[in-house]
Amino acid sequence: MKKEKEHLMLQEILEQERVIRDIVKKYVDFNSGITYFEEFKHKLRELRKVDRVTFLGCGTSYHAAIYGNYIFEEFVDLPCEVEFADEFLRRKTVIETETMFIFFSQSGETTDIISAAKKAKESKCLIVGITNNINSTLAHLADVAINTLAGKEDALAATKTFSSQLIILALLAVYIGGLNRKPPTISKRAIEEIKVLPEKIKNIFSLQENIKKIAEKYKYIEQLAVLGEKYHFPIALEGGLKIKETSYTHAEGFSAHEFLHGPKALIEKNFPVIFFAPNDSVYQENKKIIKDLQEKEASLILIATKGNKDFKFKDILYIPESLEIFNPILSVIILQFFAYFLALEKRMDMDKPRNLSKFI
Ligand code: M6R
Image 1 (cartoon, rainbow, N blue to C red):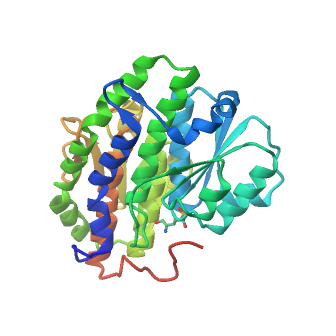
Image 2 (cartoon, rainbow, N blue to C red):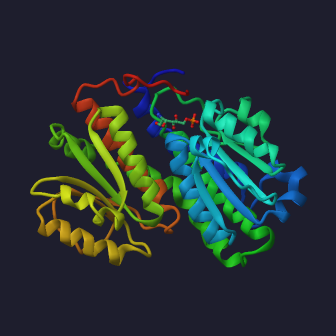
Image 3 (cartoon, helix red, strand yellow):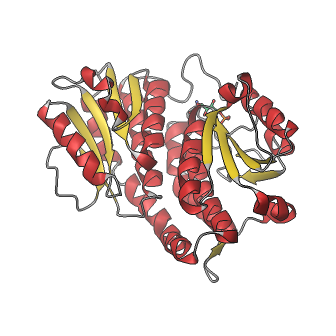
């Protein structure tokens, strides 16, 4: 790949606007207001019979799987569950035949994913592979293979492939939900919002200088917590992973309320916490936790929705107003930039961190 920026990771973060446009172009017909996945053309009968969905992935792809679980329950109205591929593989599993398995893998070659897909296939369930490599082993194994269209990702840290997994999931949920269950009103709003999403992503790019300054300030920290609830739970996990692998700083993602059950003991004056608190259905509850953390003098970096007047401290980064389901696509980019700039400040090689390979 031609390197235009100093680092591949930065280049790939900045490609996300284009990637989302490409995905939307392929799957959304704005004239009729529908999403359409031709990939299911020969499996529509099986798809209509599905009565539960299991999502599997490893690492970043596992975080996309959690988002998949949440959005499918909301839009498709089916019981869902999410698993680490390795755990699914190594324990005894009871599989119902009408389960649809959705496997996520940027590379399509991750060993545990491939083995888990083979295990699921033995039970004759519908297997869907969502991958950035349509010629991969996962794509060949799957009954339905969906290309995330992110283009080759060369930096070790997954960035554009993660957001592409999220947007594909959102569109897929609208598509499958529309096949037999949900009224079109919900999907109509989602489709209207998708139209303006790339512009909103561009808006996030304009925050780079602010994020860099915050990263400069935090370059000596040894640990931090990343909190988010509901759709931002997987984003908190992803933030923790991204910061660890690129800057070697010990960052852990938590679901915001789960954090209160023990990890909160870590909080003392100046303990760094990144908190995702956009305007959404869990904002009021999040607000209480943020106030509590403020009282305990934690050092907070807040990701909130533009126009939020509840908090006045220094390190607040604003995302544009969007639908709850799309907020994560905007806010994760802030975390990707933060991980990148933190690594840069610490003079780490974020494109090739130690001990890791692009797939294992
Ligand atoms: O290629 P895959 O999506 O299957 O890879 C899974 C993980 O190994 C991968 O997401 C890993 O966590 C990345 N280093 C994340 O940046």
